[in-house]
Amino acid sequence: MEKTVRVRFAPSPTGFLHLGGARTSLFNWAYARKTGGVFVLRIEDTDVARSTDESVEVILDSLKWLGFNWDEGPGVDGPYKPYYQSMRLFFYQEQIQKLLQTGKAYRCFCSAEELAERREKTMAEGKNWRYDRKCLQLSPAEVETRLSQGASSVIRFFIPEGETSFIDMLRGDVIFNNVELDDFVLLKSDGMPTYNFACVVDDAYMKITHVIRGDDHISNTPRQVLLYKALGFPVPQYAHIPMILGKDKTRLSKRHGSPSVTYYRDKGYLPDAMVNYLARLSWASGEEEKEIFTRQEIIERFSLDQVSKHSAVFDLDKLNWMNSVYIREADQSTLVQILVEILIREQVIKPNAVTPDFTHYCEKIVAVMRERMKYVGQITEDARYFFTDDFEYDWIAFDKVLMNEGAEDRLVLCREEFKELDELTVEATEDVIRNLSEKQNIKAAQFIHPLRMAISGVKGGPGLFELLEILGKEKVLFRIDRTLNQIKIRKQSGN
Image (cartoon, rainbow, N blue to C red; front, side, top):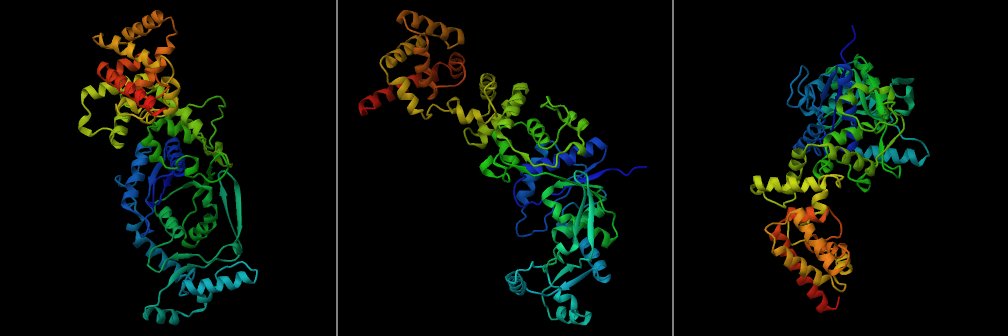
């Protein structure tokens, strides 16, 4: 009988969940769901100085938003709890004693200053630095004496001679010569475990069968394999997935578009679109023409055999295109809810302003904007005029459209005609503009462009007549008057 697949995602809570981590969690989640396995979430918070409760919440919220529900982890107790490393110190102490007793680890009393001095001397001689095992020569009695005197120490792993190999599910056999490895630290002077040690102990205790992680961890793997063997634990299978790079082939950073999941959530990207896009970074289903995959389709098709060894390139334009596809298919209520959340978060409105009338107003906005949107937050970026009369004009466009001969007069004509209407419907306002253009013997555009600039401050946007209907008579008349006043001010100032 085959063992149940158990995978884990183990972030460090020192900041946000970046896109690389999100894709790693996706591949683990998809692999667990495909194989009927277990997806474990473990918080690696042993870096006390940098780990924060706020970061834990950000990571948990990001994973929930993406829909990667874990089977064991924070808030979901399982047989191998606790799922925070800071609560698992007993397990590390237990295993460190085993390594000390078998001579596979030893105490090191060398200070950081001493190590730096010896490292500099070795490198000045043109040699590669590797810990010189000075403290390995200490007798048990000398070790006890130093400890009784309160000397600070770390515990190092003894690297044996030979080679260390493992099979990577993407790369095949990977071999390291042990001379390339240092006697690395297992336990720091404050008693906290290092990444490699805690990772191995926890993966072993939690019976993790497959470790799917970024290929920046390949160099850690031989150390971890040696630890598994030294502790007598079975070695899991490894799959190191490639990094996500920017278009310039450098590591993904803010200059390529924000690397955080929360940034895209707060901008109004849809979680299903983000999951679809992340899945397509390094994973190919074999269907070259197919780009859009539902979660269920990702699960059904996902295979580590189809994951590339080569770095993926993050393409914001591609993400925007994919998100726009999902926006066009999304429920109206979903988009309205996202828009309202953005408006509250950006302090455009207060929570108590969300009345049924305001929600209906947002529904009308979404209806005319959804075909133009790459993400919902574009409404507040490009169409702030929906939510304030005091918008900033695009002054270059203002001068081009409104400061030419006749534009002011045409705005006055529109205002007078609109005053006579009970309400500004699409049909009524279109009739007004068509009739005015016929009377003036000019193109309708010569009314439409000045009017759009007057009520929105920009030269592009949704259909003008739909925009007039959404804003309503009171706002439209106020904005025309405001714009007429601005025209006068600019004429007086010589612009």
